[in-house]
Length: 288
Image 1 (cartoon, rainbow, N blue to C red):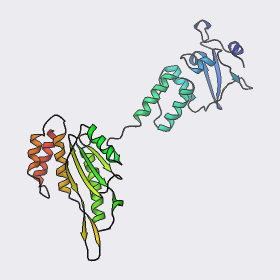
Image 2 (image 1 turned 135 degrees about the vertical axis):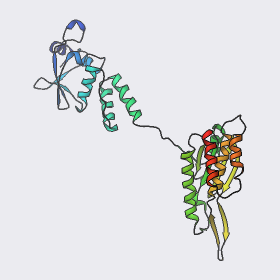
Image 3 (image 1 turned 90 degrees about the vertical axis):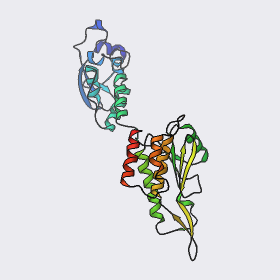
Image 4 (image 1 turned 180 degrees about the vertical axis):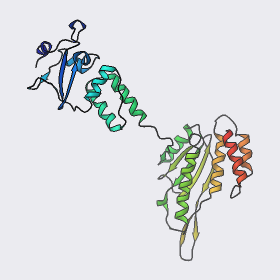
């Protein structure tokens, strides 16, 4: 049907036309809808263009205007044109379906609202850990961040010898401790993991103000009666201590935090913390 004949069958959307009460029968992908010219022309959309004579309109044998789209969300499109707002679906899949229909019909305000809802449904991860594969990547991360840095090298494939009996368990314990520290000090310390770029098997490195200030290597070679073996250790207390020490370097341009330094100084070289010492460290950390 031509644009001219559409104007004859359906009144124009101009205010002078006074066609608010004119009903239109729509067949959208087999879903039938009955609405008014006033609703279809409320906003500057493709539907206004269709029913103002600027676009060709097709009819079926029973006089329904044919729109070759899925009709699942067309009721929501009409409701938004009537009221200016709708209750958006909860599922991301249906939000995406509605977004495609809103874009097709050029309902820009609905597109904006669905976009905003989808961003809410897709939150950013709370804790992100970069994986580095080269020394250049490491240097760039360490030099550009204002946070202290803790790096774990975990390259099991670099081993040339068989592991001792507890080495596999200790390697996993190092990785688990890294994950726990990432969560505990998220936002204050930049944690990075090296899975390719080093010849070390398991090694912790600690950086403050862009400089390396400590290292804990967890592997060594031991000699058995027949051949060499790789031993992986899990020096948990020392790793935790060094992690606390990097917090002294949280803010560039400032000296180390005196209170936190005093809290950690007495523990250097000790294998484990007492409950009182842990409480002391926690209080110092909370005051930071």
